[in-house]
Amino acid sequence: MKRLSKKLLYTLGVTLLCGGGMQLQAQSLDQAKKSYNDGKYAEAKPVFEKLVRQAPSNTSYNQWYGVCCFETGDLAGAEKHLKVAVKRRAQDAYRYLGEVYYQTYRFDEAEEMFDEYITLLTKKKQDVEPYQIRMDLASKASRMLDKVENVQIIDSVVVDEEDFLSAYTLSEESGTLTTYQDFFQTSDPDNSSVYMNQKRDKIYYAHQTDGNHACLFIQSKLMDQWGDKKQLPMNINSDTDDGYPFVLSDGVTIYYASKGNGSLGGYDLFVTRYNINSDTYLTPEQLGMPYNSPFNDYMMVIDEAKQLGWFVSDRYQPEGKACVYLFIPNDNRERIDSEDIELKRARASIASIKDSWKPGSNYEKLIQLAHTEIPYGRIEIKKDFTFPIHQDIVYYTLSDIQSPEARGYYEKVVSIHKQINELNGKLESLRASYIKANKERREKLKPTILDTEEKLNSLLDQPDEWEKKARNAEIVHLKNNHK
Image 1: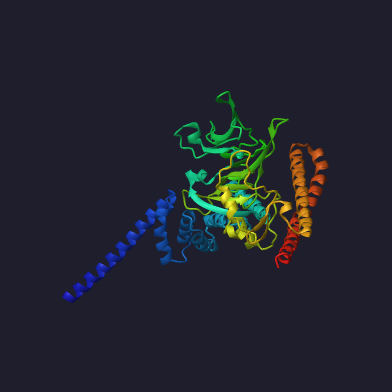
Image 2: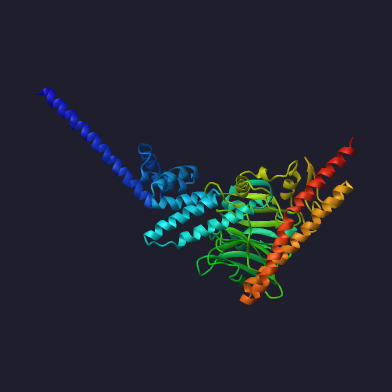
């Protein structure tokens, strides 16, 4: 009897323990699902991680954990577990896996995922418009990736988001940048900037409007007071946030950031030009990669006195941080000359700034120049172009080139770049006319635009070829004259 009682009590104890454990697990799962539904992904993540370890093939656990990984920045973990959920046709897993592919520059795969997600939504008669937009953006980003620019990014620094302007040292000729709070002496929680031109008689900035989003404004100085406040037209401002303006010394070329106008994600960088004669602005042009990305990209500045530029991005940065990149402006928009998609992804995402450096280049003087204050009228280095030869030898003018043969080759480079710039200007004007034209006028403009594009494309690869010839000829000349 005693033996039977002990056995019965043991069995009852095990049952209670197991049942209690299952109850605790159920409570933990319920709490995690609540956190998940409330958008508290970091809280829910450890529970789903434990559950997915216990049941690696469980569709829901993989989807929930994959989404938590994505929302907390673990893209590799998100991809691994969302793929499991997609194989089992979990609907939301398609959307999130599409976002993972999008943020890792696999835009073609992102487009396919969004397409499949739209198919699932359509079958259930659910709204597909937001994801049609995502799919179209993935397609657009794929085209931009194919044309990624060959930009030399010579330095970078990670800063606090609210302190990004500390990385900029503009020459006096290029104007000044100030935070909105400092310039207007306000405590408003606004992380935007104010640009003031070199003459100190115009400011450009952004602030909140009645539509509850930031728009770009300009003010002029009247006597000793800022007045004549004007909002820039709506072909510049979008229906969402715009900000971070900078104006070149010509007074008409404006760089700024926008969350609208077809942004790839968050803020994207745009450029427009003011037409003094008609008091209008050209249709904004979205900059390409690597300047723009699926993340926030803003505060494009080109210091013409230094012939250097900066822009900010929070791509792959911890929350609250941003990276300020220093680069050599690529006026001719040379593209990456390769069919290697992985190379293009690396250059577009700025996986390593060293990947963009030209062989043998030494950028120490330029980096030092970037942090040097230059008074108006004094340019530290006269630079018509940047032509790296070998190690620390870099030429900036035709007179620097010692070999007559090399100089002749590089004159070709300069001439072709000039043609490219002229064709780019012509194309910009033609495209602006095309947008405003009626159907009949558009049909007449189309052949001219196509012909100009063809001429431009035929020239794009030529500067690199002539530059290689010039470099080789100069190296031979230097060796022969230093024996």
